[in-house]
Image (cartoon, one colour):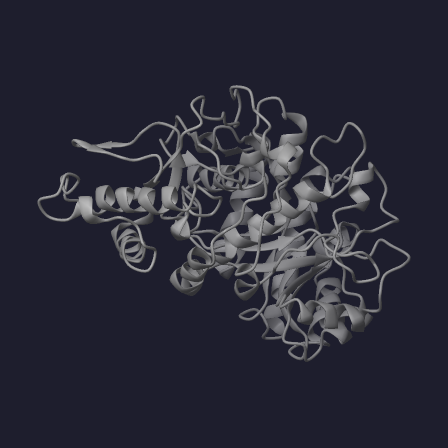
Length: 469
């Protein structure tokens, strides 16, 4: 059954959370023989409202095309140049001068990714990473660009020794002293951020028997409680990101910001690539855009609004590996969308997660590692998320009882559900009233991250929560 957001909740989300929302960008890879010109690509980005792009090199035609576009750009110093950049300061200076300074500020370069997933590079380039980062930064200092352009390096989640539960997140022990601590010191000193590539698809593909597809695709689900910190997670993406935050916290680098430099879901895959489909790719990326642009951070870092770069702009027909590698694109090379999702707050007003009846009725086994299970009764309720804070809960409560049309008579003074007289208890009742009146549609228990769905009846004092109207 196709289910959709109501216009009113989306309008509320846009007004309520826009001020503290995150940002969406896209990775522009070019391992293909049939892509449009860089000039056309820039026109495509602007037509879609995409204001950030990440490229994997410093191709002059691309950087020239981006000149004057207003699009913020992250460029990459490829892994094969790490040795030269690390060993010779003059090489690093020349590279920055020729590939960054020559285009700036007309081309709004905002970051340099030094290498990409260096720790899994088979050419053993890890030892050159930090010296290369420092030399690139020093070149920016000499050119007086260091305040505007930050230096970092994308890490894969394989850089974690432990990622489940999220609270147990820890970096690989052999990398901590020689690489992570000095790199994080560098990021702190230069005011930069950690770049992370996160792909829930890989975790789901390998563990589809225990991870709920709804949990992986940001769809409504009961959530998973982290036994280590008591936080409830409603998406695999949040759980993965918080594992990295936990790893940072374990080393006392809580102040380091994070940018998700790659995440995505393939629209096609081989027979053994479970979950690779157009529908799932549309759901993951579309719901991710909604999740990021409506703000709220993660359960562990509720105020950490994220910048996230979708992977990737185009299907790339010359990439090696399984079929999925060539089918992460949001667009075909002819610039037509592979599936229709928005990239802006305005576009979210009409966005629908187009869920097929088959996938909508799938049941999931009891989770073992990061999964979720469906309610055995079929009943669900909507309750307030205490982590959102009183101010956000109050604003959402006011909306639910006002424009939202929830039945808030039982939480008035002297009524049956007035006690306990707390914002959380009153908001839970109002949110659930709204949720039930809307037929428990996907998206009607969100309130900008101030609410979530549960499968056991809530209880505040003597108050009973209805399951339908």
